[in-house]
Amino acid sequence: MYYVGSSDIGSYLITTPEGHVIIDGGYPETAPMIEAHVAQLEFKIADVKTVAYEVLNALDCHIFLGAHAGYYGGREKAATMREHPDGPNTFVDPEGYKRFIKRAEQRFLDQLASEKRH
Image (cartoon, rainbow, N blue to C red; front, side, top):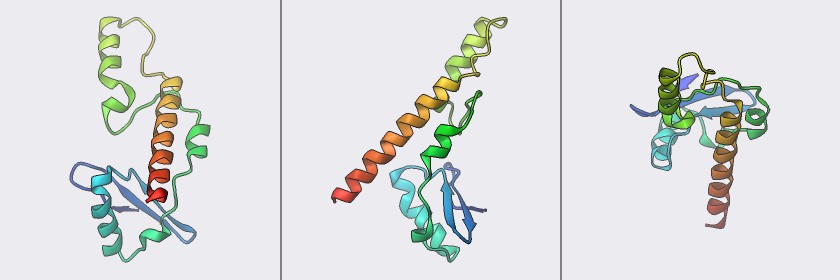
């Protein structure tokens, strides 16, 4: 596993003989930098596989956390738990995880379709 991200985007390249995977590709603006880091490691960006959303959709995720609190409503959930300490744990949110993955997959598919048109 190699770090290929920026100072504030944690992107990792995992290499295998069957192909490579980048975890957290960052933003469109960081793509050229990540591609350059992959090349500096003497790997080919063409060997990077597309993330399989089927796997993410199949995960039995109950506690959804992410790199940024905005992904999972972290601030709001923490505030609710402070206001209602004896209430249910708001971080147990399997439906929130599924909504996030569905939105991420749709953004990916939209971007892919846009790139194929150009």
